[in-house]
Length: 386
Image 1: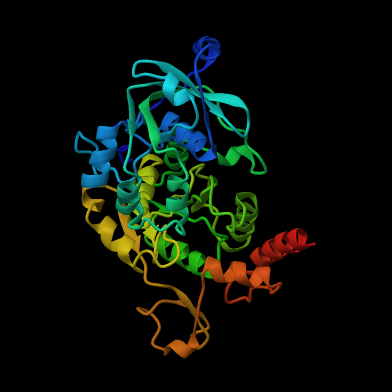
Image 2 (image 1 turned 180 degrees about the vertical axis):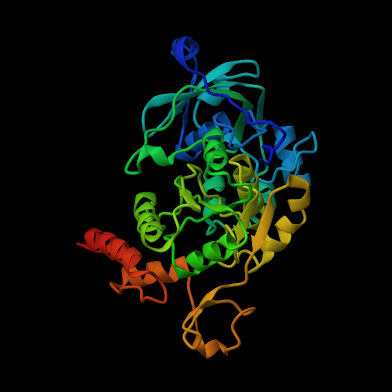
């Protein structure tokens, strides 16, 4: 099986008596309240999904990632995992202190942070490097520019997972868990499929095409924070479930969720997604057009070109696809590589188009969505528009 990034899976979670001791210690520590995206980061550091990271990055580590796409030791890393600090607690904490990271939404302790660095960043420099823009219309830039610009770095110890709401907890598998599943199934080549959208016919086409030459596919949707207009994760999960039940060989697909927030950082996030899926045990990853993009901030195949520079070094390979469409002349899904017909016969699919149809009260046609998936989406939008 493919090695985790950096050579071993990190485990920063404690249990039993050790956890109880830390929880008692945290009662008297300064409290840093964190939003859901940072709760997600704590979990993914703790369970090894962000291996080799053991905590939030220091300023030197952030600058190394921004400028070199590597951690200071040379390990490829593309997205700085940072912890902004809001409010007066900034003035009460010094390097060497411990602080309690506390979920704002759930009002409970999540992790203990050993403060190893306390720093500020040039926000415009950060956003230009990570997102290739400082435009606040970009959702990732908007979040970052709304933060304090003050950060703490250091190792964490995870004491609590976030609550599992609306999605069955059995779908929340750690990297060690999915690796065990793949071993039990005897899969040697495992393809990751990343999505934040309801699964449509183009997605199905990409997955099935990849399955023809690989042992299995991990359908691994984002279940963390996304844009406000994205379809909620629990609704998307119902779409994946009905599609798998009706249109896939279950011996060769496995559904789990990734509790990570989307950054919408295009090429850099595409590489980040590959590294994370490598830690989950995947050997390959499907890379469609404009992976992790938003709006018109990135070139159509820029993410594919970007990850090509690193895939030999990091070990996990990208399976790159052209823009898939439904061809009315062929009567099936295709790409320009497989379809000889002119564009007037092509129906291009996208999550954006599906959401727009649903908001207008229209049912996605069979060329866009399988009927069972359309039923789930129509039901959700009808309920929310009543």
